[in-house]
Length: 229
Image 1 (cartoon, rainbow, N blue to C red):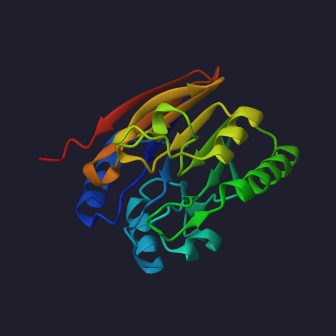
Image 2 (image 1 turned 135 degrees about the horizontal axis):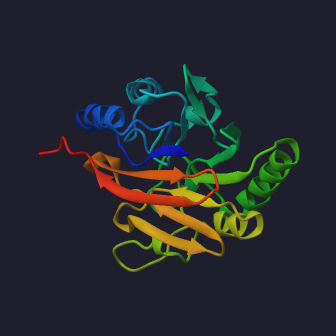
């Protein structure tokens, strides 16, 4: 059994990071997965310090979000916190691959990209990775969700996710997609055989526990830090 502690959209909340750190200790996961927006337009040093605070168990894997400093894209690791933006990490025969940032928005946030250009970049990166590595289960952690799913709907009802991410999921068929970015879209969906999850904004104490048993059956629970008043 592999137990994952999943969170995203912390947005630099130091008050909440301490509460989540305490919750990680109680939950006893094997691995922590941080799905972007670690800071709220913060510095690289702030992102590093927040990730170090969350590194109660090892390893911790992360991707930057669109509100994080672009320097995080090329930062390899912070002690035992590993950056998986366009990179792979294998743990307990599970392949983790990540994508930071989001498609262009009207708000001109810090890490945004052209969705059309990202299609080929993402396809090439995943293709190269799966040829080199041995694994039995694939987890794709992308800050932005795939378009036209329950996880990319904003409060107006508009779909604002990524076509590049959707096409990558449809083609490579990861077992699990972990996403964030759209705070109001906490929940789950399916895209083909892929289970999609958004744990909700960690800035409000939300997280998810994902368990993968030896037969690769996946279960999950959405939770909130009990230490929140």
